[in-house]
Amino acid sequence: MALLEIKDLNITYQMKNESVYAVQDASFTMEQGDAVGIVGESGSGKSTLAMGVLQLLPKTALIEGQALFEGRDLLTLSPEELSKVRWREISVVFQKSMNALSPVHRIGRQIEDVYLVHFPGTPKKEIRERIYELLKVVNLNERVYELFPHELSGGMMQRISIALSLLFNPKLLVMDEATTALDVVTQSQILNEIMQLQDKFNLTRLMITHDVSVVASTCNKVVVMYAGRIMETGAVTDVLVSPRHPYTQGLLRSFPSFEGEKTDLRGIPGSLPDLTHKAEGCVFAPRCPYATDRCRTQRPEIQDVGGKDRPWQVACHMTGGERNG
Ligand SMILES: Nc1ncnc2c1ncn2[C@@H]1O[C@H](COP(=O)(O)OP(=O)(O)O)[C@@H](O)[C@H]1O
Ligand SMILES: [Mg+2]
Image (cartoon, rainbow, N blue to C red; front, top):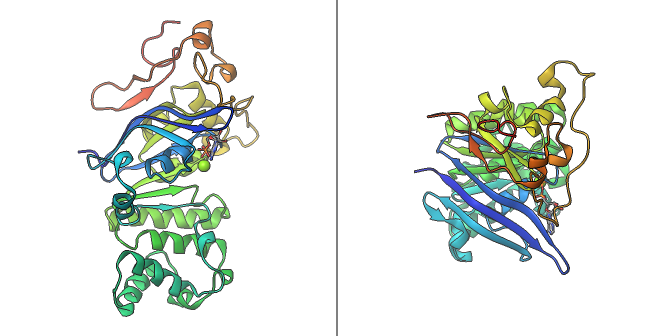
């Protein structure tokens, strides 16, 4: 059984006068041990998708579809059932997770409080030992236990968030732009630590980022999103090496490390479409160099392009499956 199976997920923010179609018809699967990267420009619906699955969105968000975690649909769980799943089985690290900390209490005391909410009555000594163990895993000194939040650097904060996310040995770790705000050196150190965790804790990981290089260096599978839709998905060694979708191709071109030449920042001209309207054809057509009339009027279904035992799917009339423009 897959660890997480997203099926036909649609998420719409229902505003007073209009709706924002933030995620449309998204489906993908995570097997136990996978590290899946969801990548796409800012505003493409990545966070909405992940937070929707965990039911962490505001009430204005209408969620349809299924999110099967070990076969159980997370979208039908009661708030009580969900509170047992979050953190203990699925945990999340955000870009600024530690903003939630109180500035007037020491880090250790706040972590202990979190622990006690989930497992009341646990002896302080036991909690402390568990936390020291995790601090070591993320290369932090035990000393941080006695510090106040303002005494920590951004990198230390994120390391503590990661340590906290592992507190109850979750099966699935979701990281939403968790290293984005850090300097390059700290980011790459933390990404290395994260990959070592994978084996050590038997984790499955969902990485959400606008940075393809993060996916390339830390994931085995990738889901490329654009304007609320999945454009291409498959193994990193397929999708990021020989991208089929023109959007994936453009995304890779906009990251210099992939093409070598730092001067050649072609990227993708244009900007994300207005998500308050559903596009009739392909959402990427207005920015696509290969778009035809068919692309503008008929939405391409996502199709298998990898053949047997090679999951690789593309939603494109021009490059997905047989060409018939
Ligand atoms: N609470 C909200 N209410 C209305 N629209 C929202 C809300 N949160 C996000 N959106 C919109 O949903 C779309 C997807 O946003 P988001 O999921 O944050 O994208 P990403 O994480 O890829 O940057 C954007 O158009 C954004 O403006
Ligand atoms: Mg986001």
